[in-house]
Length: 142
Image (cartoon, rainbow, N blue to C red):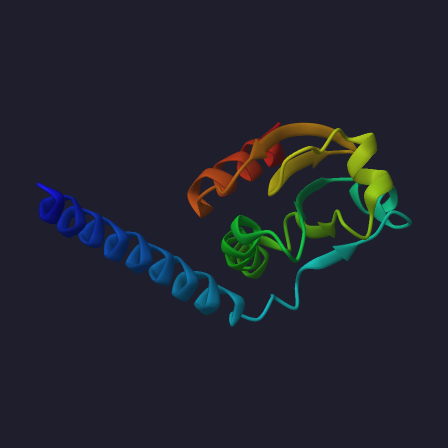
């Protein structure tokens, strides 16, 4: 019976190591995707002015956040497609804590779509491009 335990333990341990390796490779490949030139990088000083008019999608993120590294390329793709219709922005919460605190950002990634300076829709966690595009289009039509 003791032998079976170690065999099962070994198999489970190998599966765990393999899953960590796959996640590492995914994050490493996502980190190599350059951000879009059409993204607007926000700070505490520029935040209110940038979201004041029209529709703005703001990705609240931090460099150390693994899910944020997965969400980043999705936001860049959206910027490439619709930056002429809506502002697509990123705000690093680690370096711009005042804005994040005022908006009650407790988990990242958080994406908020603003319409004329007011929050229109909020997403917490990694979201697909289609979900975000649908929400931006809804804000543009509202």
